[in-house]
Amino acid sequence: MASATEDPVLERYFKGHKAALASLDFSSNGKQLATASWDTFLMLWNFKPHARAYRYVGHKDVVTSVQFSPHGNLLASASRDRTVRLWIPDKRGKFSEFKAHTAPVRSVDFSADGQFLATASEDKSIKVWSMYRQCFLYSLYRHTHWVRCAKFSPDGRLIVSCSEDKTIKIWDTTNKQCVNNFSDFIGFANFVDFNPSGTCIASAGSDQTVKVWDIRVNKLLQHYQVHSGGVNCISFHPSGNYLITASSDGTLKILDLLEGRLIYTLQGHMGPVFTVSFSKGGELFASGGADTQVLLWRTNFDELHCKGLNKRNLKRLHFDSPPHLLDIYPRTPHPHEEKVETVEINPKLEVIDLQISTPPVVDILSFDSTTTTETSGRTLPDKGEEVYGYFLNPSLLSPECSPTTTKKKTEDMSDLPSESQRSIPLAVTDALEHIMEQLNVLTQVGMTQVACIALGGKIHRTILDTASCKLQN
Image 1 (cartoon, rainbow, N blue to C red):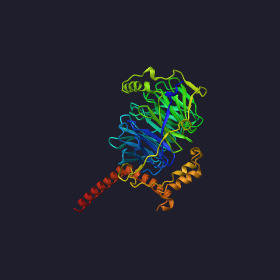
Image 2: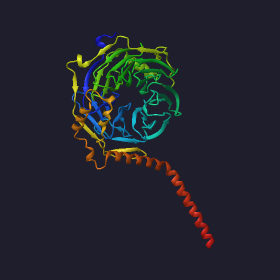
Image 3: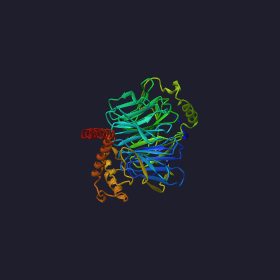
Image 4: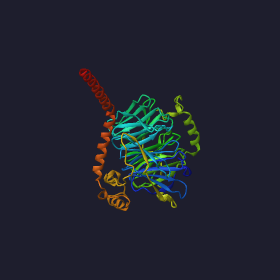
């Protein structure tokens, strides 16, 4: 059992969002944290004392996913407004907007070299974009229901995706084909990701389970049943030895993958926890959920071995690296039952002088934008989307997010225009936008045919004119 000095410690709270947290990600240098929320905003938190936080305004619906590029010079975000945006993570906030999905976008993920971006959507597709050319490259279609998450492998050769069709699929980015398929007959995966060496994938299940698969031998290696609610998110420690999970039961749990057991249960959130992530070096992790708070934790339990393991894993990312036996976790499937004694940490009971950060917030408006799609978006953001209606779903409510509290929070947001203040009702606007998108797509697809018809008509008219002249002569 780990000693008390090695246990994770909650260091800070960040308060600023006005609705549930959906996603978060650390910058590559570990000095910033980006968060995405149901309040339609992204926020950028700086860890320096007394530093300002930036709030990026522009999405017109729930922001479902956020990620830093590997070099930290861009932020990508996905939203239910069917767009993907790229932001510069500073006070400029200028962005590009991608619009090719025809339904809400659920996740964004950069390749390890930063050259590509994968997006997953409720339109049942995964799309891949070129960051260098700022353009759409190709789509992956095989899922038969909403795609919740799509992630690149560390070497960029593969993409893993999970869907509400109860499958997890592995895609080859070279030939754009589905090369592997894992099925589940009970629930579906909310989130899926590769381990740091790219040999295994882990899934966060709506059926309260966490599963680890070896994709080289197509074998379920570990199956954890440690939560009492759906598992919403997972994150591998950079060493690959630990996995942290976030659940609707209000807890975070840390799994030791080498020993195949649960080692920590972390409490601190009020209500469901929707997102969790280790920092790139593994020394920190952060979590967020329905209570609108961001909790920043110090890892502590793997400081001695982390650096050496990180170097070892980086060497294995070479394209021609052979598989290593050490990459394979317990050689046989390891079902885990919640009988092993674990350490429970509840920082709100144990920590008295906890640093709570409510920094001054600077709003960054996305007036200056470019669009990479079949359609162009509005540059002036409409912040009045009625996001709080989504919290009528009981599964998303925490004790602090009752309908009464939600109504009060909505009234407090005086900067958001009401439905009656808009010149066009929101439902009509959305319907017109969707119709325009479809018309533009059809128009672009048919441009070549129209041009050919026009050219053919012109040639035909020229032939008739020539024949007519000959007859007159």
